[in-house]
Length: 122
Image (cartoon, rainbow, N blue to C red; front, side, top):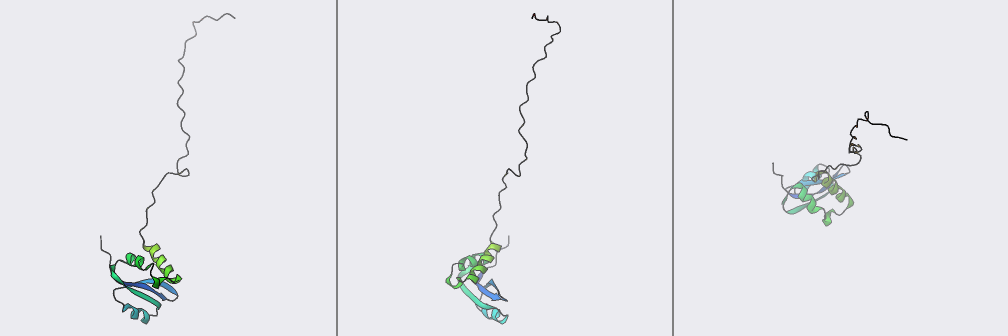
């Protein structure tokens, strides 16, 4: 399994009206984002290097990212990149075969030969 790349700088920026989470290993990334037309650039340095997912979780409750646009970008990232929990298949009434239980087989009465019996008086 490949190791995840680690980052020391994370934040958000807006390009063409779309705010997204950004990752870097140096705060000089701010200048590169500005050069390419990004606005509302908000990057913070992390205490330790982290994976992208851990970094986004770390800034989620930060005061710098309290705005609705930052929170929406963070939520979008977490929705798209958080591990998905596999649903356990359970039988349901709509999926189960609808067959009535079979009634137990009735025992047949033994056949009695009545050809030699006399008629009973009436």
